[in-house]
Image (cartoon, rainbow, N blue to C red; front, side, top):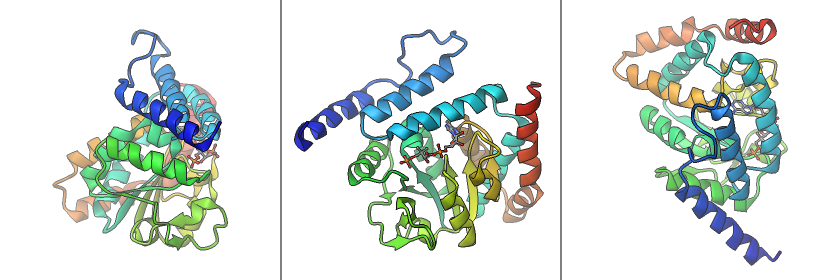
Length: 269
Ligand code: PTJ
């Protein structure tokens, strides 16, 4: 396939992706696996549209297994983490939401809404970075209402990170004081921590390195976590900074990770 025909194929898939309601799958909403099938459907379309990497399919499968064991619901410790994340984002001077190929396919509207609620920037940052995917994701976010999408300039590097995730924008992740990182691979989470940034990580696996190094680990599906952080942020919009700081200080990251692991191991819902 020539580069031109590949571009035409992707553009066809992308417009199909935009025009097709993401809830339109061939199973009724009453199906017990409806949410999980809808998520798969979105990821599959993300790959076809050149947004999600093929590795994103594997990551989704890993996530699904943990979500199944968590009961596919936001457990109380995750809700507390989502509230602390909202408070931390509202307190930030320069918050940035990092976007990869999985979250762009799964929660584009919800990311734009969260960015709006906490006045954060959106920055595309990919592990499997190609210019075509960077542009496809930025276009996709704009089609979902994002006004300013960062990540394409890539004029700064995260110190100590050799791979493509180290490429960031100076006025984005590089200068951010708080970064929300949904679905990460670990290395960058550690490197961002070393830059003294407060880091909020969403990952369904509580044993994964990225939630373990996060200031606020959220063990929940991005599909539930992102809109719930927005709901908390809207509810806390008029809170004063002392109240927000108290919410952040009272959150205990180790306790939240232990509670999630306990839920997964015990299987008690
Ligand atoms: O788009 P790119 O190029 O930046 O690549 C993104 C992926 C996700 C492919 C890349 O970061 C990767 O390979 O990640 P890993 O190492 O597979 O880790 C993904 C983590 O996210 C795993 O711990 C999964 O359990 C978790 N996960 C998967 N789906 C979800 C999830 N966590 C929350 N919500 C999900 N829907």
